[in-house]
Length: 81
Image 1: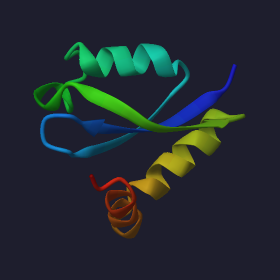
Image 2 (image 1 turned 90 degrees about the vertical axis):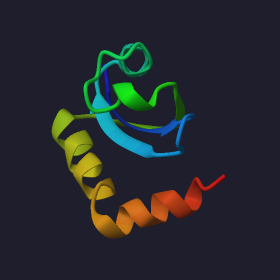
Image 3 (image 1 turned 30 degrees about the vertical axis):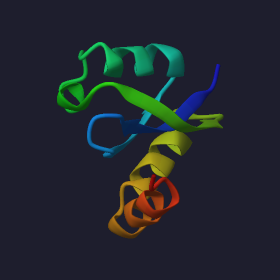
Image 4 (image 1 turned 90 degrees about the horizontal axis):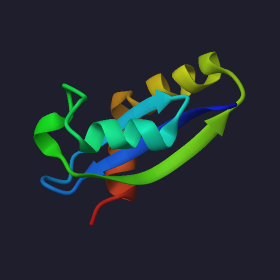
């Protein structure tokens, strides 16, 4: 079983959310059911990207990298619509 880094987009305001998980389907379901405190006010969410990693530490490292200021701006530009 792998670990995933994912990018969601709010269909309400267009915000992006970056996270990591072992079960991508379940995690997206949790975001869209309002059970994730930080995203519940901006649901529904659309899965834009998902990248698989062999270890949890690799996934968390990638997640933290994508959350840096410069990378977040690059993601916003890439997924602007």
